[in-house]
Image (cartoon, rainbow, N blue to C red; front, side):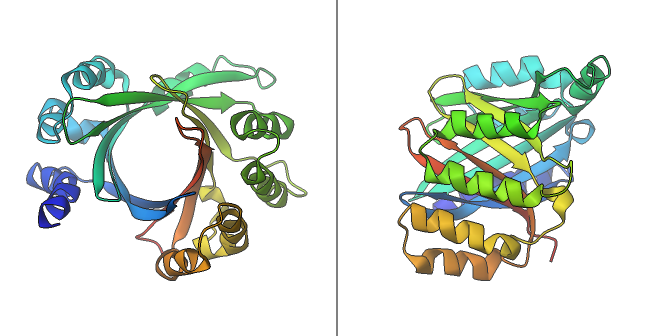
Length: 265
């Protein structure tokens, strides 16, 4: 367990040793197996990372193939992030590149009525064996309408999915009597059938506890013991909710991930 703990905190140590500042975000993931809360992400400005990407990836045991892809795409990124997730004693690392400046520049030439997808992020995930990795591409949906969002939710999760219905109800509630829609990302795994979408809710300035009813319905739909969600809410309920991600795993299992700012309460 001590070794697992030291590996889980390794990204913190690497950035601290290199004196690279970062922002901290946490999350918990819900699926049919339970609720997993040992997850976090450290976001950093690309300019602070500089040419140290290789050093960071090497210390995290990133596989050679993934390192080559990251190195090739690194220069066009405006931000980067390091993620870590533990589930049932299995630890994985992640490295993300954020192409915000590229997306902003491309959007200048896109009309308000043009529906388009732009590559906004790429994320690499690997186990501690340092051999196996896979990449996910995150496509920002430009000029999406509410009807488009409904279709995306249904296409990702299926028309008969209770999770899709709960998320649609949440969107309807948040968007009542307003033209506001969350920023939407569609994620595709390049080496499996896993797919998901992400809805950014930071603008709502709501706490995790404000979504308790929604999360309870999701938990019940997954047939999870009620005590699991209650314990998670006791820890996270007062934190600022950031975004939610939902989709199907490579095994076609539904999941929902809730991201929040642990520094804000």
